[in-house]
Length: 194
Image (cartoon, rainbow, N blue to C red):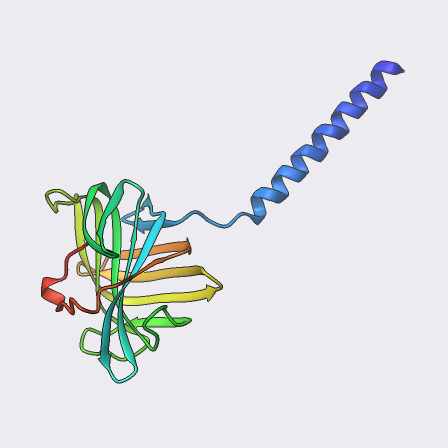
């Protein structure tokens, strides 16, 4: 009888632990990622660069999401370069705020610089910051970037296609570091990846 109670107690204890672990796992947020051609790539950092006012009340904020293998080089509060190798997803966004992305769905429109749009995007897989080479380097041609911000936490959902009509999807939840690049005011063609 004693052994049966021990076994029953052990079984009940194991079930409680399994149910508790399952519940915790189900409540976890998905990892931050990019999906492309059936493969998933990790991203875990993000930045916003304010390139200033484009039109009255519309600001150009560049959103860059990237993996931890890439390290930014800063000088006097500005990004002057990067080192390392990793994955990058970049968007040139237009919003009504110079310090944050407004909540909403941003739609690709190459010819518009209206709030709620983005006109440039690029996917880089296994990008090397030293020689600017990547295993995959594709421009975004259409799609949406959905932004939901609560406090300092952004939740970003990407559903786009590239120049070869391949799906580029992704998800990021976390903080974005803000930089003021408004004095540089670069054009599309001369913006650096970092």
